Amino acid sequence: MSEDVVQHARPAPVAPPDQEKPRPGRASRDPYFDNAKYLTIVLVACGHAWEPLTYGSRAATAAYLTVYAFHMPAFAVISGYFSRGFDMAPSRLKRLLTGVVLPYVVFETAYTLFYRWARDDPGYPLSLLDPWYVMWFLVALFIWRLTTPLWLLLRHPLPVALGLAMLAAVSPDLGGEISIQRVLGFLPFFVLGLTLRAEHFERLRTRRVRLYMVPVGLGALAAAYWVAPWFDAGWFYHRGSVTGQGVSRWTGLLTTPALFCLAVLLTACFLAWVPRRHLWFTALGAGTMYGYLLHGFVIKWARFRDWYAAEWLHTPLGELAVTAMAVGGITLLCTPPVRAVLRCVVEPRMEWAFKKGDAARTGGPAEPTVPADPAGTGGAARSPSRAPES
Image (tube, rainbow, N blue to C red; front, side):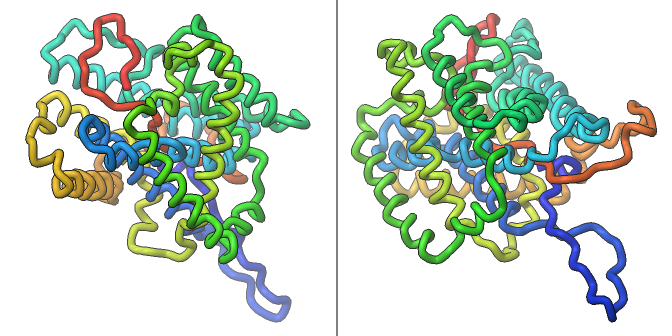
């Protein structure tokens, strides 16, 4: 995630009256949330890498369905939790522009140029209103952040957000501009995060809750294996209304809250087992924005060049190899050298673009910029009309 946007810091210790006060400095980051972000971005990469394997492997399909049921909701919840302090202050708006808007413009353009080159399609259109592949989440995050003060004003924001998600699910004519279906479909998770407090996460991390979550996770994986032959993962993408799944539009009034409850349960299971201490990958949690923005190039290149045509990849050993490459690749993309090279477009300061009085102060928690892409993957070429890309 962007270092300028993510500031989930622990409060500085207060010195006893008889001791010298500690020197002011940067508060330490909470390793729990950095661990959660890193592990979630690993699931994102694995999910995208597994998608071509699901066509011939029930086990790969079960793993894919399990991950897609909760990994994006988990990121949205964490994003909402760290957005509670967003108040339209100039400094916060500056961070929103430099940490979300500018990376979106740069990488949406880069992905379009990449597609033109990789598919030999120079006429493929560039549209900032039609996010390609993983870029939709930055649009959603921008809208969610801007509406945060409104959600914080409401007495019961979660039912309202869930109602909007249900409305989107039953509205086939809502349109695809700015990925509005996904923006509304995942909105309840962001709003849920706005309502959470630190003690909620502490309760999840108790030994009793962690033990209770073991059968929940195993049961979800077993259920995914059972439904794998016939269940459509598109239910988890929220790319359009439920009519796209071949059911009546009013089915969305039932499936939306049901999928919401399932995702919340699995998100709680995941967060309960995220390590609390500092580990070797904890520092990588601050760089998941880079992994998120960059891994799509690798995934799409593999699809465009038919790397998955190799038969051995569709064996158990091949599936393990794909998983190992996904974990290793996304880990590499989150490392400090990659951040140092691309900081100018992912975490730019841009002091020259803002009035000096508007840029200085920051305060309160800010949410992680990226999470993960819930969309389905797929390497099929898009038409010049920029049909939704998974």
